[in-house]
Length: 496
Image 1 (cartoon, rainbow, N blue to C red):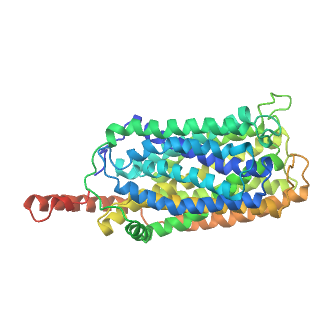
Image 2: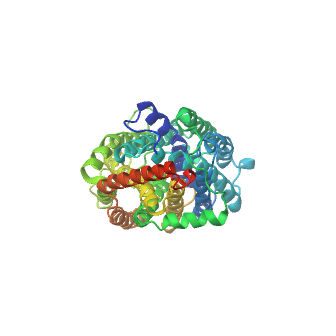
Image 3: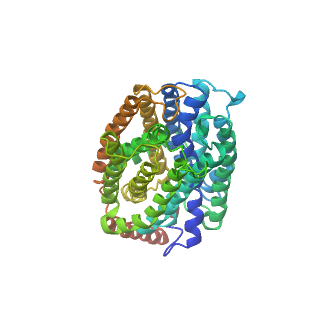
């Protein structure tokens, strides 16, 4: 049974979504700043940094399903998810600061970076997996679940954009600010505080609603049992369609985010003032951050309409195609000589205009894919008589983290293959190097977008099938309750 039947209170939408701010802070840090910080600031080889982050992501991906299973099996008077949301944020904050200020203030070495990155990611999973697993528990409605994910995505992007704006205007401001070490400590401390407020604040805001004993005591945890249940969940046919499309989408996202600062600084020269003669702090990078946020706000009003008109699967495919076409258009025009001079106000404003729509469609794709998981939960319940929200959402994080790691690894290889020199400065890099970087990036982005659109567009659960399944499951629960009342079965066997 869902916690809410009928319309969702506005306060609940906001409070639940606020918990995703921590994920946005983490994602922004890892995707946009970590590679360039350890490579260009601390002097580690880009390929080694990307390999360290890939290893950390793979380790974390293996741990994620265990966290999801443990979350599903947590049995307390505060429910299954809240204990995790109260215990994990503080150690997460400590590890986050260490990531941006390694002991001694110097590069920690390859395995040191792996260890810190693993710690951050595992603790973030201990916050995010239980939080997002609340969505199918809060409501069973097809559109209300999309609404909750809209607020999660908006909050996550807001957390990331706040950190990006502060990075470009406060912590690493001005020309070459991204290449100076001093600002990254303040960036880490502020992000740590925001993470704690997000996770703990969201948990407290939902406490009255979800703090109750689970309807059924789960079986004791065992590692073998956990992986058996996880493999059973991952064999769900609809999850395999989702996984194939999401894998390509997340690799593309990881690559696009991690290479963005390289492209923004060295290709588009966005570290210069946005308007000639304007304030030094009002750079193209700040415009970039604000444009990303506006694109997510635009998505907030578009995605619900698209889901009602086309469904989640077609919306995801449309988003994938539109995002890559719009996103690569400025690069094609730049290489063919049909674009204003890079670094000029005309170039920057035109680039930001295409970015607004490209990122909006990219987020439409991601939110459509993530929202599909909630429907997989009921498909699995219909087949197995068990609910496994944590297993499926941790499965999503497993895919995302493996794929994001591959995306960051690809960026490291692209930067290395293009022979971008260490300590490079905007405007001083040979055009051949930039052209190679753009070409390698474009080829990878097109292939990945086509794969994502192909598989996500074929996701087999429609709105009509989901609503019919809810009727079946409701009847099954009523029959089980009636049987228990007659004494035909043990009431403890009723599926919640």
